[in-house]
Amino acid sequence: MTSIPAAPSAGTHAWDPDIVAIIERMELAGAGPLHLLGVEGARAMLEAIRRPPGPDMSSVRDTGFEGPHGWVGVRIYTPPEVADEPAAPALVWYHGGGMVMGTLDSFDRLARDVAAATGAVLLNIDYRLAPEFRYPVGNDEAYAALCWAHEFAERLGLDPRRIGVGGDSAGGGLATATCLRARDEGGPAIAQQVLFYPGVERRRDRPSMREFGASPFLDAADIDWMKDLYLGPDPSHDDHYANPALANSLAGLPPAIIAVGHGDPIRDGVEQYGERMREDGVPTALLRYPGIGHGFAMQVASVARARTAVAEVGALVAARFADSP
Image 1 (tube, helix red, strand yellow):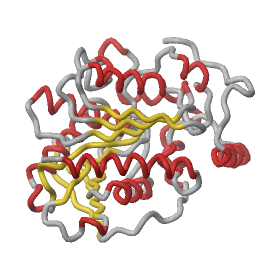
Image 2 (spheres, rainbow, N blue to C red):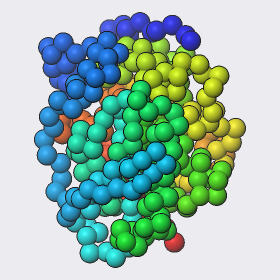
Image 3 (cartoon, rainbow, N blue to C red):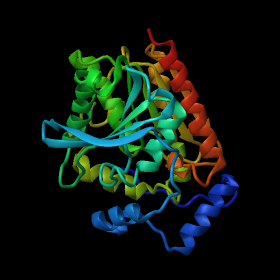
Image 4 (spheres, rainbow, N blue to C red):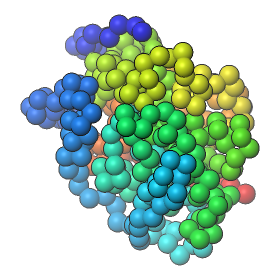
């Protein structure tokens, strides 16, 4: 494993003014690396964050299914635009949190923002977390959720031809792995994959990691900590579902939209994955946003550039669904 990057020198990157305000508040609150808090401390910190209410939905309801490791909760968000459609487009969504943190409650605002921006029903999946449930539990439940959405599409009011997958950070990694597994196993069709700064590999020595590996939003040591908790400390045991960047080929995957901030330490790995999809013939929109870093989709309420990013991604998703056969 490469060494932990030092903090970037002053002037190497200009954060957006809204992001500067968030960083100042974090410093005043004494925020620090997650791994120093431990699992329970990190979870409590995330759940304690209070965000303004998100966009109103026509309905929000809790349901679930029996998965390969037990009951999996699902929260379904239906935006007003598709409330009367008998067969609406949908995204099976996997929240972030490094496979260690996050609940349907802490990611409620993001779910609402994505549903509103895309005009699609959003199925937020409450997959099990590490270290209590290590790989492949979360991956298994992510894939099972896609299969469930297709199997019960009519009952759920979904159009099986317009079901995509998506996620942010670790959830984006689950979405990419689900696409690979559906391809490999001849699983359900996926209309598109929507990825906000997806975690597609373990930490690697890349320029973005060297520059931003000590960023306030994602710390290099935290990446190692969270990956080890879910995958185990030995990378030689990883397969391409654990780390999608290990896949020999990305051909045959569904069209992709990838959004990442310039100041994200995993930026270069994310963009390389997107470029590989393009090279393998997958239609891929690869969007980089200046001045913001990891987790910006969770900052829509306070960062104008994050609102722009989510709105632009949402418009692309809606256009893709509109063009679906």
